Length: 147
Image (cartoon, rainbow, N blue to C red; front, side):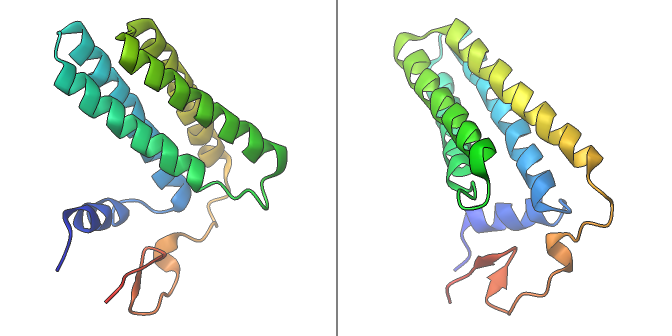
């Protein structure tokens, strides 16, 4: 059985050269989703607002969980704190229907995205991509696929 999420992941992973580019794409998606949530709020559509806030929460939560806390030091700790702050602001913005808070979150996510995109531009072009790595058959994109 193939799950829709796995199929979507494979489609996206096949077009992205590295984990770093995947990070930038996730952040771009989170910015688009917060913009859609704000549009839903302005249109008086709580379903659109809520669904898109949930998407942003899911992305930010995964980004926080993916941080390498053993190797990252204070940078990872600060980024985790920022992700937690964003999650708190999203929760309040959702409860209060506060477009200004959502705007704050949009600005923070945009800044993070731009920072990672700029860092990606500065990376040497000799970085090995995930697609160059050989995984055993039960692994795809670095994730173990249960049979």
